[in-house]
Length: 435
Ligand SMILES: *Cc1c(COP(=O)(O)O)cnc(C)c1O
Image (cartoon, rainbow, N blue to C red; front, side, top):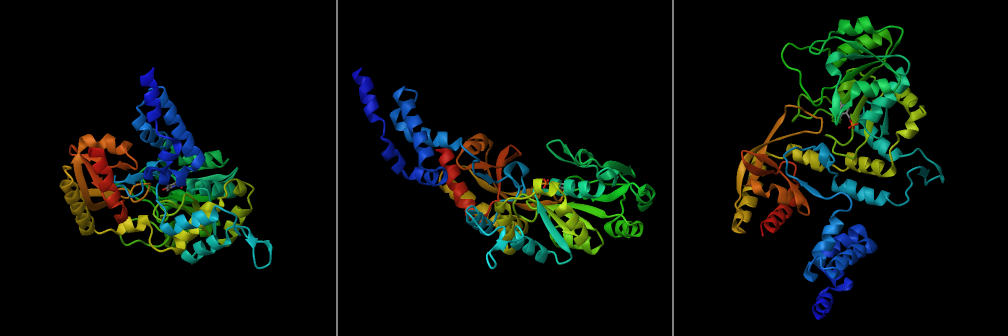
């Protein structure tokens, strides 16, 4: 009995736990009430003897870590990792998000005091980024952009699409199913490996609502292949008076010399596509959203369709998109353009520091990829820190989680997608995981 009382007296008081520097970040992130509740729960576990009195702060932090999304350092070498939320936002976009979280002039003209066009500054930034677009529109994601375009142009009519472009995006979502769900009928043309302009020409008729061209953004068809390019399709569509909708997917707004095979919005519009759709959180490096560019009359029809309201983006997305467009470099563009020798230098420095701290680590060459439904087959030569593979699970469970990839029997922490400023964080997390 006395023993029991003594133990209870050793349980740290709530204020003392909250004053621990490890709680500074959780307090800012979750608020006092939630952090206090976690501490109280840990104290309860200590009273019942489930944990020792010393373990209260650790247990409370562990309980808190179960809340909400957890921070992950992306050391996989996959620049746009879909399971990690695709593009990480730039500092400028993060600041814009925080500002937009309160009340803003999103739909108000402060000059006149009247209602203004929702998100007009973000839309203006998007239009300025692609001068070839007569008009622009933003929806929830690229799938929503396609749904809106196809519903507006081809509900109850036919969408002409090549059999080589019937894409599965990921997690079982298939573009053809999405198109059919709009009430359009698919008019498949050509074959898996070859489709000609003539195939499209023969399929276009009085029931055609639109011709859809889909960029094969997550697969490649090689060998005896062929498919008409945008100029050829645009000429046909213009002649027959049907709109050409082109899904570019990856969200490059202009040609990117590092990814010469990847289509971009400006070029496709210039070549005659009537509407181009893309994702905001792939190579553009912005928030999840769907971008629509093209002919003013068509964009206006999309905007006026009743579904547009159901697909519209929130103020946070508009703020982050605008900041991405006007803010210069972002983590995705920096990661893409990082030079192999610079990544090598960082990997060597990090490995040397880890070795000094008693961790077996060394720098190796490593090949990254773009990922996230963009630039399939493109490899990004870079560098990684190799660690014992037994650290894989510990680092995945750490705070922040450090996610690498296991290759050749080792855990590789590839620095391609890691902002240079996070090397210290990796160092500290790995050292903590090893002790
Ligand atoms: C990624 C992708 C999509 C889906 O875009 P979301 O923004 O994830 O909805 C559709 N089409 C293509 C070609 C893509 O690459």
